[in-house]
Length: 226
Image (cartoon, rainbow, N blue to C red; front, side, top):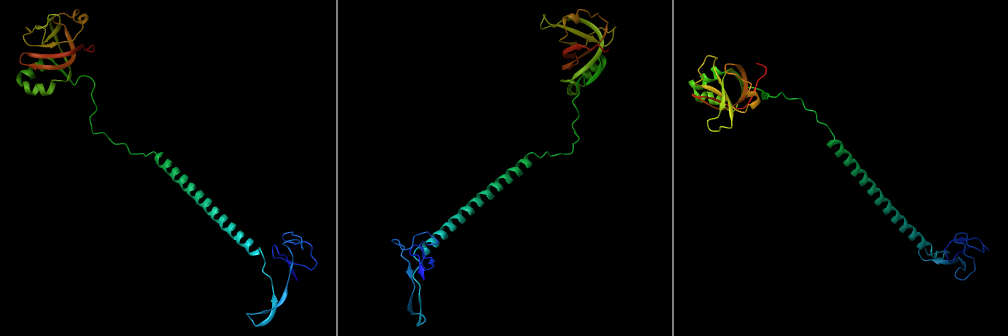
């Protein structure tokens, strides 16, 4: 029985080349080793001595090391894939959460809607009477409010403190002497020029002051729907 000295493979008799590694039999370093009968120390009986398979164990160890390295690489790749999958899943969940439209039931507003236009519609006689009877109450009610007041033209004249400013004075009736009036500021001169004493008009404006001597309106305009 012969063995290849290079790889330790058992060779048939009269082999010229190793069937495993291809090394020529009989070449330098590849002389086949012939088995010989020896005394087996372990069994104390004659046995067959088999020469060590030179290089065979080393090849097996290399294969084992390569297998372990490949296994580690595969585990690392799998770990990376799992990690990337988890990151993608978390990002998708976050996008869905942020993109969710929350529908809430409409709530009824308890605040009264803002009224555009005059808050009060009063006659010259009514508003003058309220300020004459209780100025504090009338101030709390009217000052700062946009109102519509209607009455009769007393006259158009200039302000006592500014002769360049023209104002309209309204009185309670056509026959009234006009001692206490509603003074209207801010009307265009083109409008004032066409008003006649005793003419019935309706004016919108913001109440700035009032008392026993009359009421003052600012930013006035003529209400066409009289």
